Length: 491
Image 1 (spheres, one colour):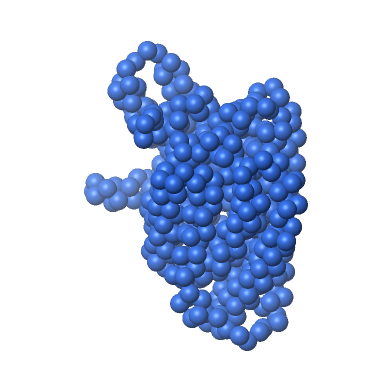
Image 2 (cartoon, one colour; image 1 turned 180 degrees about the vertical axis):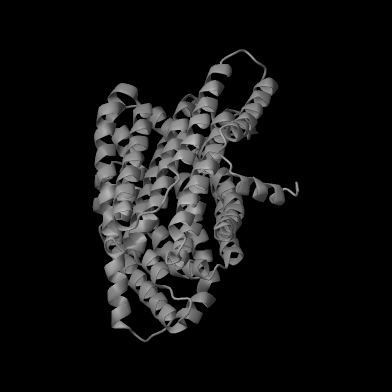
């Protein structure tokens, strides 16, 4: 068991190391946006980025996941055929949709409610090019992912993000190009990524056509499209609803800035997801697979608790770091810091959803993910209309958290039906209870008038106490303690 989990852990750490570095560079965009974009331009840019994320799902038509599922380590011909089918399918669909968006750009500008933004039609056309260029890299990236060429894959992503960051700094801080500069930066970064991946594309393109593989891939892919679209709607629907229900641009931007501060937790969930699917596809036929997958959920919960507590404890110190002529996050938006614990909890539920999705992917029952996420979308929209008028943007945060919880529960029920994994629920609760104890202890103690250095010391002590509580509650078994001793050379 442990050698397999070590395999997953190694991939997660490798993905994570590069992803954290890359995401930290990307994370710098939040203070850049908050300091160099006007409130209206920031709002418009978030709308544009949400629009492009939505298009990316449409353009990929589920072929990204289908290629990963049908990649065959033992048959290069099948793998090349799957690569070509996925790649050409995405290219054709993305080209047709991009032409359609450009043709109807006037109409899209009128209905977007952002027609008063300068050059809004041009910006929407440019925004359509972001996912058009981006999806050209999806299948090549999944080829590297399937071959476990993690360093190469991550390095290419770092180059792309670095180029995007450099362009953002130049276009926004030097030339004050506002949202237009951010869009150009992303197009340049995506184009550079595609150019780097051209040798991989040429290597794997096969012009022979296997009708059976084509049929099987589309049968797997098509049901995932509603799920992908629902996932995007779930992530972005709160913004337009918040805009509709409140007249305060400041509240909307405050919500968006602080929502993005939950990115460290999202990084971990995304990195885990990247390593998780190739892992369970490789091992699901093994005799001990269900026990191994259950143990993975336990460790996911443990690491998540550490990240969540650390983020919640220290985010206030982070946002007050000096930056430019003020602080890392503009002080105008500090009032929204209370949504961060809710957002990171939502991301934790999303990670549980990803854990539970293993069963339905193994069983090829991909339509169930659409049902799960569509239900979550409906609940999210309804709760936003109920809670936002009462609690403002805090109500939007509660809505997304509850929606992710619902998607997680429904995915668990579906997965259990098709592929029952032996989860260690008792051990998971041993993690959750001390985490809540430490969290509420922090909230109580931190209200006292201590100086900043003492507060930081208290936070560090609380994190250490969380680990000690796990030992007191006997979370770690003898085998795990021995592995920990070997890891830290304590034997």
